[in-house]
Structures are given as C-alpha cells and as structure tokens.
Amino acid sequence: MLAALLAGAAAMFSLVSASAAASAAPASGGPAPREIRIGHLAPYSGPASAYGVIGKAIGAWFDKVNAEGGVNGRRLVLVSRDDGYNPGKALEMTRRLVEQDEVLLVFNPLGTATNTAIRKYLNDRGVPQLFVASGATKWGDSRHFPWTMSGQPSYQAEARVYARHILETRPNARIAVLYQNDDYGKDYLKGLRDGLGERAGEMIVAQASYEVADPTIDSQMVSLKASGADTFFNVTTPKFAAQAIRKAAEIGWRPLHYLNNVSSGARSVMLPAGPENGVGVISAFYQRDPTDPQWADSPEYREWLAWVGRWHPRGDVADNLNVYGYNVAQLLVKVLDQAGDDLTRANVMRQAASLDTSLPMLLPGVRVKTSPQDFFPFEQARLARWNGSTWVLFGRVYGD
Picture 1 (cartoon, rainbow, N blue to C red):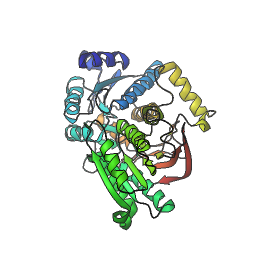
Picture 2 (picture 1 turned 90 degrees about the horizontal axis):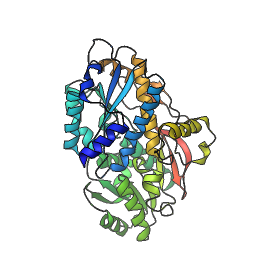
Picture 3 (picture 1 turned 45 degrees about the horizontal axis):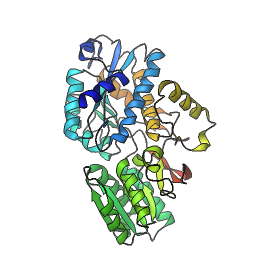
Picture 4 (picture 1 turned 180 degrees about the horizontal axis):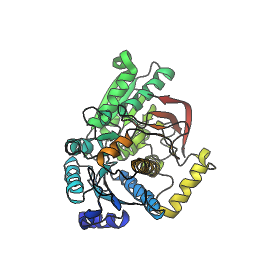
C-alpha cells in the first residue's frame, strides 16, 4: 500500500530518483545546479491525511514555475514523501531526503510532533527546515534553532486573538476547551490563558484532551457540555473538528464556538460537519477564503482560479488548504529567486530571514515579514464567522 502511494506521489509531484543527485543544490559552494531539489513531508496517509492536499498544491505551483522557465533558469524538483503524521516515520523520511535524495532543504513539513522529531537532525546538519506547516511557537526560536522557520501564524498568537475577542464581547464567558494532547494543543491552550490574563482561572471552566489515535471525541464533548460552558474553544485537526461541530449539534450544545484556523477549511471540515451545524463558528484568517464571494471579482482570485484550472485541475477551489499550498509555494520561490546563483543552504536561510512582501491570496493588509530575529513570517489575522455556506470576515486586523 505504501509503495503504491509513493509511486503515485512520484508521478504527481515530479519525484526523481537518487540517481539525479548530481544536479542537487550544493550545501556550501560549488557549481550552481541545473535543478533545485526540495524535500517535503506530508501526511498523505494517517489521521491527518486531510492536509495531504497541501503537498499537491505545492507541486502544482512548481509545475507552473518550471513551465515558465524555473527559478533563475533552474527547474524545481519536489521530492515529497508521506510521513503518516508519525514522528518516527517523519525522521526516517527526513533522513532519506537529506542523505539519499540530497535535497537543498526540507520545505513546509506538516505537524508539531513530526517537526519536533526532525528539528535537531536538520539543525545539527545545517539543513533549512523552512516554512514549517505548524503554528507552534517553538518554530520562531532563531537563536537556538537557526535553520528552522515558521510557516504559519503562531498558535499562541492566534489564541490570544480569540481571548481578546472574548474579553471585548463576552467578558463573563464560561469557556470550555477541547485540545489535542500534544505540543500543538498545549500551545493554543497557553495562548488562550495568556490572552485572558489574570481572568483565565475563573473563565476557563472545563478542559478535555484527546489523542491523535482516538476514534472520536464524543465523550469529551458530552463532558464539556455538562460543565455549563457557554463558550467553546475547539483546538483540533480536521477530522476531530468536524466531529466536534457535528456532536455539539447532536447534543444540543450551542456555545459561542471558536475554531482554530488549521481546521477552518470549508471542504475539509465545515461541509463534512454539516454546514448548518457550524453556523456562528468563529475562526481567524490571514489568507483569503476561496468560498468568500467578496473576492470573486478580484484579480487575485481570478488568477487563483486560472491556476487551479490549468495546473491543479484535481484541486478543490473551495479548499483553503489549497490556498495555503499556493501561498507558501510562492513564498519559497521568492526566497530562491532572491538567492540567485548562491544556492547554498546558508544563503537560503539568509534570504528567508529578510522578507518583506505580500502574496496574492493573503488578506489585504497582511504582509510577510521576517528578520534574523523574527522567524514568524505571518503575524496578522482577522476573524471570520461561518454563515452556513462561507466564512464572513468581520472586525479589525489583529497584529501580534
């Protein structure tokens, strides 16, 4: 089964065999390559497989770039491997990418636990772990891990946005929290507590956690409802997010519902949960939601549709995970373009740490900025509310 999956991925993402390693980018000097080999990890299988579409979108953007002449005349080769959202498998696949596939960098690997498992290995070897697809605060630690950079708003910063909104609009809220029992879930919980400040102890009346391997979160939802909470912070990946929204409706629990951004996809979460069940759910956004009709006539959205139609025809235009893949792929291309002919790993990191740019499918007013001391490219967001068919933005832009 795994062999078949990898074979399919090879065809889809222009994977090449290790025999092409002669064209890999040098780690520190040497002749400029004809190709730039980019490693990538994604959960094409396992409990977080909904995120596998990100890798497909990245591959589709690289196909477009290659057809238009590549980056500074060099073809991008995406070597994308399945880690099943498993830390041990992630380390195994990362070793393979670095030692056998000889990639220049590991780009946009997904997941908090999986990236934690590979961070030391990559930093010890000076291999960029670039634009990590996880909002854990640890990915911004440029002092201790100078080869690792975040690729999402930090979970703690996002949770502080929800906390601010709660304090502004519902200061007497009784909050229940459902969270994944790992660094990802605990990071969000810390951000909420920090945002609520001295009132966290009185406002958070119930907490329940779940494990990645759990089949459902039904019992946790029943317990949280019994707490009497009137506000719910849902810190879950797509499978469990859809379950939580659906279960809340089944048991007649109608709290003010905040959902973490990583599970705000219309196609991957809101529709499977029953679109009517999620009416009123609030989430934070920093990129344009493809189901929002306000963007329909914008040149950025028309460009997005044209790209999907020609380069990613199997991609779902309503899935914001495809938007994310589209955005981060363009961000990496900007970094590689800035690197010019100096395609060393050190220079790639220097360029990644000197960004000040926008991307077509980010929200207006949201920019990508980094520095050697700031490894968080995305630090702004707006809130949006699900209306049964799409997300509707409201309020101001929050910056952390």
